[in-house]
Image 1 (tube, rainbow, N blue to C red):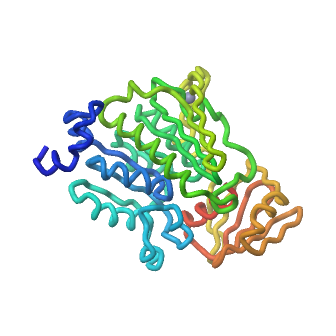
Image 2: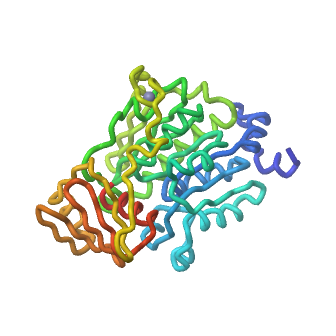
Image 3: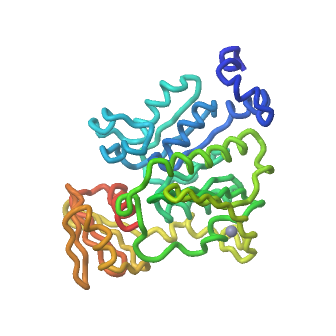
Length: 339
Ligand SMILES: [Zn+2]
């Protein structure tokens, strides 16, 4: 460590749990942040300041005005320029800590690129907004023995759980199947900015312990919190399920693209998401989307107009998104409004 690094990280080095050896490991470590929205902003900011030497930021979206309320790495100018979140975050972090390497990746995390993007990670932090991405991360990390930290935030509610392969249960032990139907999202149910701040910090705390070589000390637990009522709970993480498809049977179906609805371009400037195994109650979804703008629904289809796009959602979960040929953007809109 250089004298400048020793000075910079002195308050961490003084902390007995880390010490100089722990700090040295952080400087050499690589963390991957999957999704750079509200959770990812907090994680990236914490890990960059803590001196994690290599950080890869993966996000497929662009900074929007409505992100600024909670996505703490972004500024008004990022939204005005419509910068990719990963790029805007990397720029900001370069001015926070010039001594580390931050690599932005503007991409949709898929089974085709997961090896390239997560393969060298010491830890993966979940900053995604959908179960499809989380199952993919879980399968990859369990198959390769990489720890990852699940996290979610919506409304006033947040949740986090560490997955240490070989030691704790995995996401599929706890949730063998994704939730069915439309789910509340930050777009439909809103979110308090304090929730991702706390969840992202808890995830970062576990990540730092893992990266400094203390993964064994992390207790298997699920932390849930409601920052409106002030109720915070910790439950013991369920034991590993020997029948779990991922960590028990080691069948990593999501690495082959299972659970990921195929997508096709349909006509000019439209994308179809061929989800068929996820029945959606169109009347309930209509109620959830109504505060956001015009929405029409009958028993056959729901139409919604998140400007400049038009979404048509069918009862089996299939959707057509008009106004784009960008498959990643179409998936992002689906995740935002259907869950
Ligand atoms: Zn499992």
